[in-house]
Image 1 (cartoon, rainbow, N blue to C red):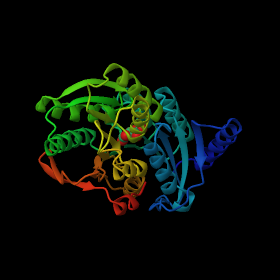
Image 2 (cartoon, rainbow, N blue to C red):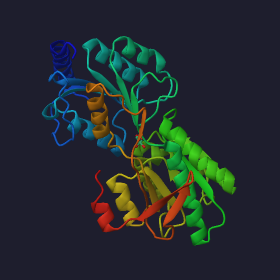
Image 3 (cartoon, protein in one colour):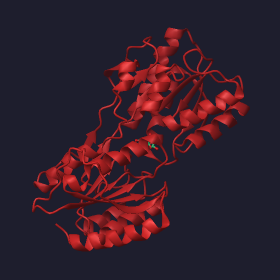
Image 4 (spheres, rainbow, N blue to C red):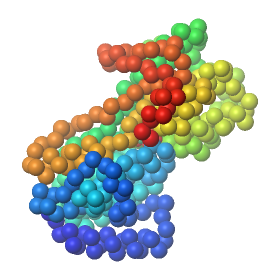
Amino acid sequence: MKKKWLALTLSLAMTLSLAACGSTGGTSTSGSGSGSGSGSGSGSDGDVITVGFAQVGHESDWRTASTESAKKVFSPENGYELLFSDADNDSAVQLEAIRGFIQQGVDYIIVDPIVSTGWDSILTECEDAGIPVIVIDRTIDDSDKYVSWVGSDFKTEGLACGEWLKAYAAAKGITEINALVIEGSTGASATIGRTEGFKEVADREGWTILDSQNGDFTEAGGQEVMESYCQSYAGQFNVVICQNDNEAYGAMTAMDAAGVSYGVDGDVIIVSFDSNEPAVEHVLNGNMNATFECNPMAAPTVDEVIKQLEAGETPEKEIYMEESWFAAEDLVTEITVNGETMPITQVTQEVLDARPY
Ligand code: GZL
């Protein structure tokens, strides 16, 4: 498709230079995929397909699952050469990585946008270079110069959390909700959507949101914000909404230290988004009351999009991931969100064992 020998030479040079400095972030060529993805990416002309993946960073379990899924699918065994960039949550680094992919003449660019704005210029550069862009996970809200977006409806996740809490509180005889929110990274569409969805239900139900601060989707961030909340709002709150699992782990550490009880038998209801295996285990054990899934496994769907493009077909512009909602108790078995009735899955050992990440 493109000048692959040039891309591979450049990426090998970049890999060798990066290998010398080690990396939590940075760009590398991944040839280490385990090959268990569904991909069979050989190009229409039988050549290896080179994919540049500009990932957000390595801030959470969700992110790790997303990266591992991509490395399994876009592997040499599946006919791909993957150039991988970990921007370490730095938008400037992410944009420069994409410029690097353009210079290397990759066949496709995949991006999980750290923030939802500031994208039209770089997407125009990709368009001018004739490189299709596929967006995964978070959304780009100020440009549509990409082929497809594969991800989750974050506002629906927030609404689901609110509707579950409404039903759960009613079942438990809780008449007053005073909530604290630990937000994800500022400007991320996941943060914007979850905040908006939960607040829509809270406003409708007359709940009080005492505070809503950025925990940056990290365990340390969640702990730091919750430590502050335990000082500022001692005895005033009965709900903590963590916008990802890792923030919830940090919040639980902070509440333990402050002597605040939480979970099924505690004074404070605590929920998270993402539903990685450790969070689902916390729900099984009653440490958390519920978790709302955000599926990180977009890579197999992106592989299908690339196959369609290689075959000259037009993929869907928006492709939504399948997701579930999990709770510790069976007090609420279903909720209605956007007119659609969705089951609430009570976590059992079998449910936990079946978690794919
Ligand atoms: C959401 C994703 C978020 C996760 C966090 O799709 O972008 O970023 O919820 C991750 O765990 O850090």
